[in-house]
Amino acid sequence: MPAVERYGLRVTLLAIALALVGIPFGFLLQQVLAEGPLTRLDLAGARWLHLLVVEHPVAVVALELVSFTGKPIFLTVVIGALSLWLLRHGHRKLVAFLVVTSVGGGVVDSIVKVAVGRSRPEFDEPVATAFGNSFPSGHSMSSLICYGAVLLVLLPVLPVPLRRPAIVGTGLLVLAIGTSRLALGVHFVSDVAGGYVLGAAWLAASVAAFEIWREERGRRRTHPLTEGMDPEVATGT
Image (cartoon, rainbow, N blue to C red):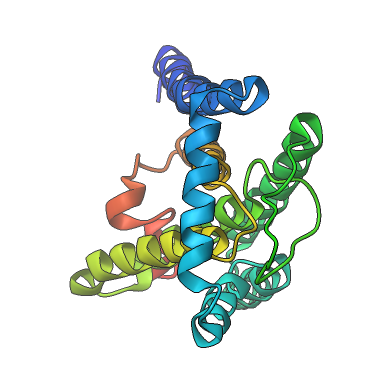
């Protein structure tokens, strides 16, 4: 790709990332810091969900199981297992993509949590507890980043008829994890929404960086959402 086109691609990707973070995430952050109208809806939503599950211990157990699939320790196992498989097949660049994307996302989440310093919801009869600050939801952000990255890496080796169900299934899992955090009473709605927005922006930036790396080494431009991060994985090249 000529230098001018590479520069244009970088500018376009930067604009997309800024739009993803600056507009929706900026709005959510402003509402949280200023305790705007959205925070009142947050509190009402948290109380409503809490009342739905507080007297149903079986539902609480189910929600905790779903929530566990978004915990750092579980995500580490998922990323680690896939990374070992990729190393065995010589795909070191994809391993770097997975590790940098997942670890970097965790660092960003921690920095934002400390900077905002929002307390978690409080109830007289809590059904679950969580440590640290509330905004953004680490489970929501990390699950979107990690499962999204895993999906994009594995997409090329999946049969074409299974790719759309895999995308839908991954999306539903990520949504279920965020919903479980709300129902367990450890996050506000804006925490989960903020986690999704920031996670999507970070994942998009990571994918964009990998795509630029491919093109600078003479490989064709790909469509990650339809054919995955590195289509050559399917052929072993």
